[in-house]
Amino acid sequence: QVQLVESGGGLVQPGGSLRLSCAASGSIFSIMGWYRQAPGKERELVATVTSGGTTNYADSVKGRFTISRDNAKNTVYLQMNSLKPEDTAVYYCYARDVSILGTQRAYWGQGTQVTVSS
Image (cartoon, rainbow, N blue to C red; front, side, top):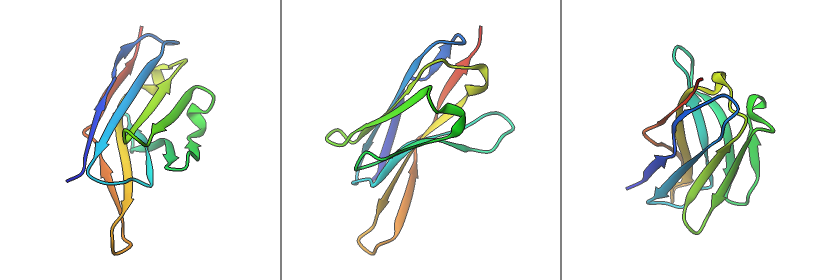
C-alpha cells in the first residue's frame, strides 16, 4: 500500500523559509513532487523531480524554491526561501509510479498547510 507522509508546514513571516518533507513507501516512484492549493483556487504544480534528478518548477517559484530527492529514503524535499503571502496554500506531496501492466498511477499526500503572514 502506497503512503505519502508530509511534514514541515507552518506559519512563517514574509521573506522567511520553510522546508517540506514527504516520506513515501510502498512503491518505486518515477516522479515525485509538490502541488499546492490556495483557498478558492485550483490545485497547481509547484515542482517535480524525476528519479534521475531532472527538476521542473512553476514560474512563480523559480529561484526561490528548490526540490530535491533522496532515492534511498524514498523522500522528496521542498526548500522554500523568500516566501511571499501568495505562497500561502495547502501543499500536497505527489508521486507517480508505473504498474507491472505499464499503467501510470498517481498518489497524493494528505496535505500540509503553509501560511506566510506577518
